[in-house]
Length: 305
Image 1: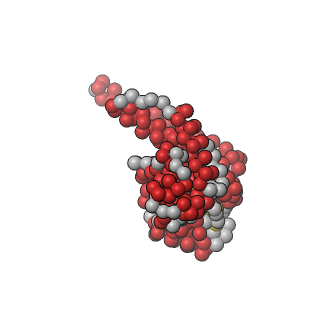
Image 2 (image 1 turned 45 degrees about the horizontal axis):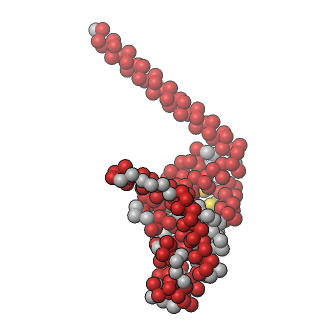
Image 3 (image 1 turned 90 degrees about the vertical axis):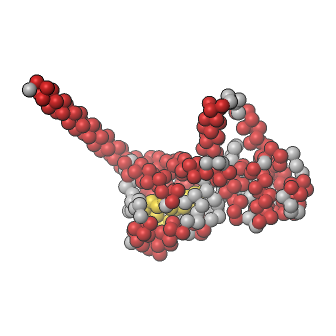
């Protein structure tokens, strides 16, 4: 249930810092926040200088670095420097005015999405895929800002051969979780990992014996203690201006990755489901076209009369 620590993938250093920041003590959080918000300055600092900027001690800088999954401050600094160099090589100059604003916003979102899966533990992801694929029932829960992503993912799972339930009402979700069994899975989506309604659903699922899978932006939230498999993704949106919208984009990407992997594992069922959905859509379109033709005939007949 732990986040994948050590050397993050290219572009994933700030993701790792932000995902673990809430689990640190306040003095170490100040160090982590400076690293995430001012990486260009931090790479020029010594450990003592960072300690002074964070109003703490060099020992706390060292402990904070290890708490964030690095071997020490120099390792953290090296990873930030690596990511800044890669980011600088990709950056393009934007025009000014509205055009520049829109392009900058799109590029910021693109950068965020490119690194949003960097903190996902591959072993936890594979275990979650296997659990969802073999489950008798799947309950997918997301409340508040996570509701839209959960509903969209539930539809994607269903039409690709992995039917799942996604009640819109929190109480209904909790009651549904309580009647699950050890053969079932409850996938809980919560950006903070601390939403009380989502945690209540997770608790009910655990009491029923179901496997709980958590998807959050932080590595050690309350949800992590309840989840058999914890997927940590997209912490960088916490430092982005449009946090709520960014959270939804990141959750959709993570859930889409999960759904695609499940569909590949359930290839026969997925193909049958996609064929059935395609035929149903074609029938719906054909019915609409027939209705339109009939309406046009009635209108033409009315004109002739």
